[in-house]
Length: 498
Image 1 (cartoon, rainbow, N blue to C red):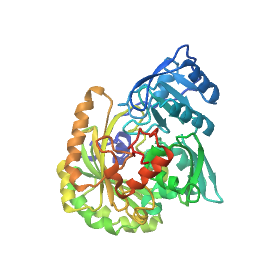
Image 2 (cartoon, rainbow, N blue to C red):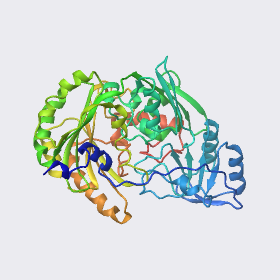
Image 3 (cartoon, rainbow, N blue to C red):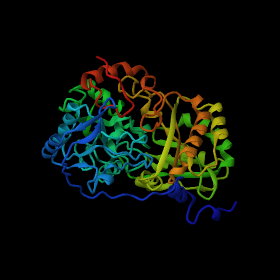
Image 4 (cartoon, one colour):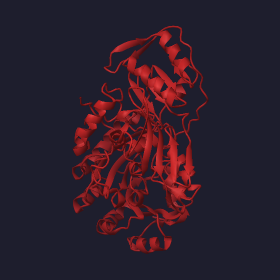
């Protein structure tokens, strides 16, 4: 097939633009104002029972907060309740748009005193929609955003509503970087609390391995600064335990010197060459340096072209990178080799449009400790030529594996990679069919996995105990200390232990 049939510019540019999902429109938030209520409003308690929040209490909360309290009917309510994944169309009883720690404390206390269901929205990127709820309170950190960098200490402080693109941009301005995820409009909060995979994790570890301290508002309304020396158990728990322990309003990250012009890009082959590419990868990946992040992707482009690609970022000297990548570039007959010296943010933003706000999306994922011939067979045999779906990987190993599995609450230190089947579409009538395709595809890969990544996993069948493995019991004890009433339960929930 002739190359001109695949793209008007380059194959890798086409993938970045359609990767592989339909594009949804970005939504720009207007500045909301508080809503006045004349009567009590219906709401939902932690136990799911219908309750009513009295008029006087809502007014009192509104007076206490610097930011607005929005109710249904407010002109900005519908915009404020929207989250990234368009599959989740939920209606909170009220939205507390917080501006500072004190606002968060007031909101948490208000919810606790009324046993009100709570969702916490940082960037709103929770794949299964946990950052919004029906009938409860959304604690919204959208206005608490921004990143400051201390170049002397090589640290960055990101507010809880900040996005990964803000973190990257602020650090790179000073020739510094830390591990951030692969879609720049993802919030720092959920990303970090769940572990934080990114294209630099082989060199610098997960996001939680770079977390130095945090400010968190716990269920009792207290504002706490946690680090290795202050509330160390809670600091341990939030590094992998998700949003189970409170609302994190600030994250302090370790930064590392970095030249933003990196050897990066994608090599693309027709899917018919998947066997040759993946067999090579199986023998090659174990010897990779920590500087090299590379992993396979399989998808069908909107024009029906099925491909396999290798996404690549080399975080060291480009001369050394060219040497390490030389053998990969000789595999098969690529449709295009897009690896070149370019700004790091090209890769960090290449999926932003395809994963745009409003898209309807579903994902399944699993952790892999060893890439075996059987797994390679399953990757090839499970492939579905559906433009709505794609197979991705997040490469681990390197610095990720050198942290002991009990040193943080993240339980998957010994994995080599993560497998992901993710889909995106715009038409609600396709939900059932698309989800079924994703589940069928992933079912053939599941036998080669053990555990999953909470930040991606969509389904709620597992309580989380099995996935957290050896760290669960300690998490449950810490949960019992800081959130005995399980106020923060819209997550992969850890049941509090007395």
